[in-house]
Image (cartoon, rainbow, N blue to C red; front, side, top):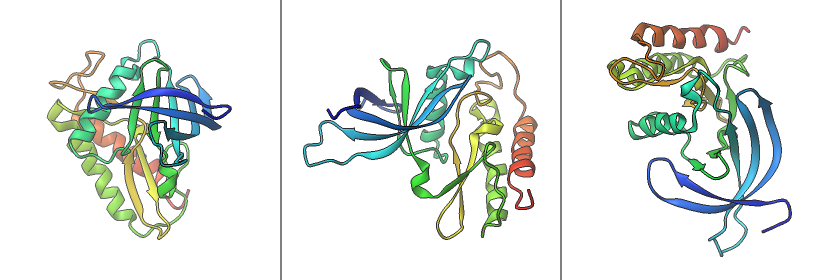
Length: 211
């Protein structure tokens, strides 16, 4: 491995397939109570055809007390359900048990990312479609109390080079819950109108070109 790299065994969340990869952390995105986030160059060690490192998002979430939805197993379960049911999540989402970290597709490859931390402040071609889709995702993911309750941090809009927005569910940690029979990990009832209200809050607060 090159200087400054470390290796990990990254398992696909929705299968038993794992890949050994070398990670060279290039820059820290954020550091806080919910964990550290980095951008890193990742290359598959079994690839002998040359240097094919690509940028990925490295996340090391903290498992917060009294927030069972932040455990690494809970995050994996949410991603697995959303992915298997066709929701717009990052195509790559792998986990290294030994290092307690996720390797996730760097969505910056596809455009500019707008979310709760970086509200959309410009006009885009398909804002009305994006708003409709967010409302639809909130209802479909709730799945009559047997799916995933999407929190405010879950929603992101990636705006491509042609100024078209694309919805992705990128942050599946705090505030986003896997629910079964209408009850979340804390044993609380999650009602569908709450999910709708969260979606509307995101639209009103973070998707306004007039901000």
